[in-house]
Structure formats: structure tokens, C-alpha cells
Image (cartoon, rainbow, N blue to C red; front, side, top):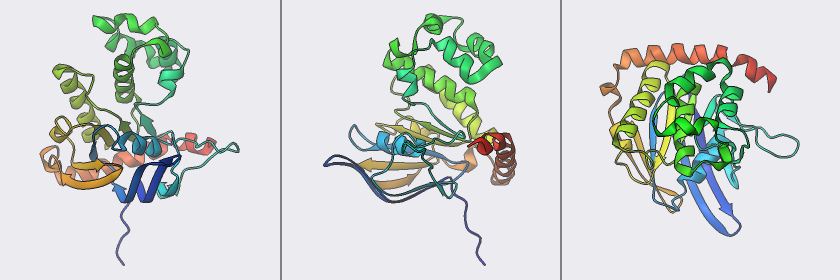
Length: 255
């Protein structure tokens, strides 16, 4: 009997509308574990709406979206309960929180706060960001903050919206190196969106192009074999998935 392939996300007949305005209509989309996906589309293509749904920030209007073969759960108020294994760099709480950056990092990362401060906030133009309130920082600063938190969070799945649009060449290269290292050493599944493929084609294994809320084409990106050998990938991904399952078991039991 053929073995069923394991998927991180499985999307079928997905539609998302705001009132009478349709923003997404995707018949089928499968996201495989340990793979880097790039979602490419101009403003209004639906890429942010798709990531919001995958992150558990918004609910689809119709269709099914499964994470690890299970639908998203909701509380008694109907609010979706996001998975602790998924980190979304554009989480709305980064914009609405009244905490300082220091307070937010302390709450999310505990004792690792000092490491993060020394690594990112001790010099340069971001030094003064540490003591400022989250809701008062600029969109570009918030995007940078979301990226560094994503790199430090060690999630099983990382979702990044508008990758690279606020970065200079050196910043983009630094983050790209960190993301590919996460994927290579931890088996992290990455889904990143961008208005163009200029950055994503340098490291994404699969490029998905959206146009008016629909998938217009899917193209291979960077060959996975150029990042790691196939035998090592299978071994690493299997081991890292097991490690993440044990690391997150307590969180799952709480939910």
C-alpha cells in the first residue's frame, strides 16, 4: 500500500472574501515539511491574506485549511487558536502591543532576552529601538523586529510577509543566511512572500506566483541539492521533527 505523504499545510478550495470583494480563490495548495517556499505577487494579489490564514490570524470564507492534517481550532468566541509551532513575522500583536520592545522580548523569550539585546540592539541605528513602545515604531522597524524574533524563536514553521522590502543588500543577505541555516540544520519549513522574486529565487525551493488571488504558476526555485545532500536532508528532517514534537508536547497538551 502506498504511503501517504506528510504535509505541513493542505489547502483545498480556499476562498477568502471581505464583503463582496474576493481576495483569494485557490483550488489546491500543499506545503511540504522542511521546504522553503516563496509566494510572489504584487499588491492585491492575495499573498498577505494567504499567510494570515496559514498563521491562524484570519479564517477562510470557505474551503479547508489543514495544519498537520488537522483543522484550526477556535475558542468559544470563535477566535482561531494559532499553533505554537508556527511563527508569523507579521503578527498583528507586534503593531498593537503597548509594551516596549524590551518588555515584549522578555515576555516571549525569558532569559534569552539579554542574548537578543546584545546580538541586535547594542549598536547601530536599532540601539534606541529597545526602549520604545511596540505600537509607536515604524513599519520598517517593526518588519525588522519581526524578522529577528523569527530567527530567534526556532519555530517548526516560519511565515514571513513582504520579505526583504525594507532591507538593504547587506541586511537581506544576513537574514537570508540565517533563514537557510534554520532550514538546513533544523528542518524548518519556510513560507515567505514578496512582491517580486528577486530575493526569493536565491534560496526558495518552490516559487508560487499569485495573480488576483489565484495561483498563476508554480516554478522550481533553488535546487535543494545545492543546499544539502538528499540523504542528509531526510535524516536531519526526520530527527528534527522528532525533537520539535517532544519540545512542543507540553504546549500541545495545554491546548
